[in-house]
Image 1 (cartoon, rainbow, N blue to C red):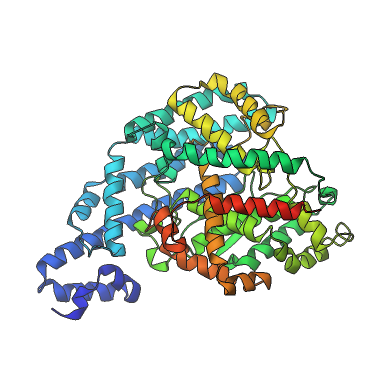
Image 2: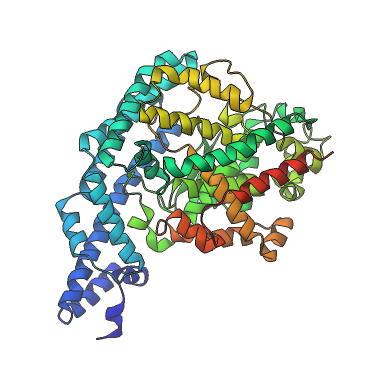
Length: 540
């Protein structure tokens, strides 16, 4: 057998033009009919998968436009447009042609090609359980419910949004029943965003965090607080955007393959690694908002920009279950990259030793009296807040735990939508020690429920845990830590690319974590980080 026959079509796509591959394929067909049957199936599977990815990227582009540049009058039809593309992608995924390609495809076990075949087969089996009309209804509802939610926010009245939320919960319950689950119905939704998450394993994990963070936060909030009033002056929005973009570039986000815009709710979105876009938000009277939001979203963007180029338009850069074009393996792993750059790097004292001078040059009057030390302490000050978006690093997980518990009860049927407002407010008082002033500080404050994303909130906390675990391991390498101390972020970024980014969606979260750190998900490095961080910030 000629040596080149042992290569896969995926390898050919990396090294040859499509024409060269076809010629080579024709040459070997006569000699290896059985091999070529599997090869042909895999080739067809990759071609069809690429088309699915194209449709999903088109839907993502429409979603990006709807949240950044689209006139509000476009809302009436945009949801239908996105739904049409998503259903078309699902129909192609589940088509007879794709099924035949998946049945015929073959590849050597343990290769990326074999993983691609497995991804497609599992996705087809999953979507066979989900009615097309349910997919259409869910996508259309995500747009219409968002509009109702926006109006409820403007009027600060949950009653306006309540019917839309009731319909959303009903759709999510139906989805869970169709998808199937072994334990709690919420498990079916958790699995969508973070495979492996269940009520059974999340409950003790979140309980461990809650038991540690609540008393730590109360103790920290009882201390003398750093002065942060200077952060609430008038800061030009245009200058803030310039500073935010500069910091994103500093840590490694490639602006030549992306852009930075303003959105009502910040997000990152990619259309392959060559076009990865960020959005941020700016508060003219609160400087940290734009800085840390942008560092956060840049962390997401760096992940997507460093997925292996060979995975572009393949099942290893496409979520065939959620029907979303994305290179990151899960919501929790994606969030870990954002939280790592935002908190472990961006809120470190050494970061501002190298970057505060640029910030002070941008705002010479507002920051004239400040030093690296006063600025670092100010941006790390912790204060209890009813709003997740205003929460600091210490209390953030209490907000996500609250939402996860409410979601579980809503999907499980032990909590009615009519009761969720009161339950939310009571838990906020209990966990955070603050009172809710109006509905925009409570049940209306997040975009996730209007867009049907039940099962995602816990992944912010998963991201915090993973970030600490990865950062602890990475910085055990003196080269990485010394570079951070010197203001050089490339060694850390390269370490993350090698361990996480480049693999795309090939491995699940704990496989990546174990390979990178020697163990699966472990909350202890994160809790130790919180203890160290706030002991240092509040040191007398």
